[in-house]
Image 1 (cartoon, rainbow, N blue to C red):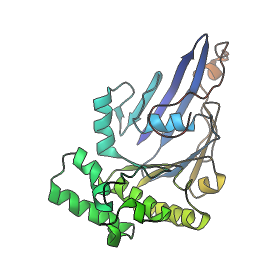
Image 2 (spheres, rainbow, N blue to C red):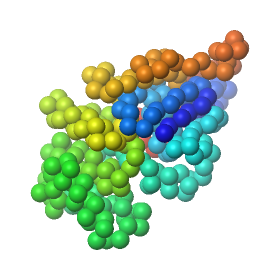
Image 3 (tube, rainbow, N blue to C red):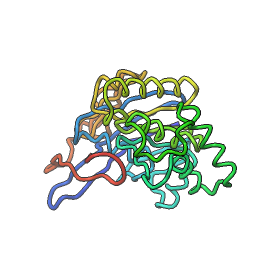
Length: 256
């Protein structure tokens, strides 16, 4: 379902070259629940931006459902996101002037779904997360856990095959965070592919597979052996004058 082949994301910072992603090769299969874990600056958010079609690699290939999306234009990437991907954010990203139902409907509006159909889809998504009775409330009238459930419902409404969750428990207390993770596990059991992005090992351990990233490289993968980059296979050292930095990646999350 997801295949990255020798993917690099390189930023030029004056005389220095910053490799936010440094030769990553990765496959994630349909119906997997995988966690990409790393500290701030490790490259995990940049990796998620590429997987989520919010950014494109400098070089290398990214195949999503066997379609090469490596160098698509912004409008093409937007179409892929609308059809295939659902996003859950740490800060919920709800529009506070819209009620719960309208927030969940919003991605379907962008997809051009007819009003009656999108209302039905939004209500069904809210039913799945257990807060259909809150559909007329504003986000400000909900608890943090309820707002995250609205965020999950919004991700589900378009029936995506892949759900990307960026620090989904980061703004929640321990008990509520546990409930959200259990719900994501339930969605995975129902056939959704779930990718968690986190710095928290306690969150990562809820996934069936843990992929650890550091300095833009995959250093550990509980599901597979870590493939070597082209430079590592050939014994050629990387380019000199390469430094790590934390530039802002396009789209989600903290700096790379």
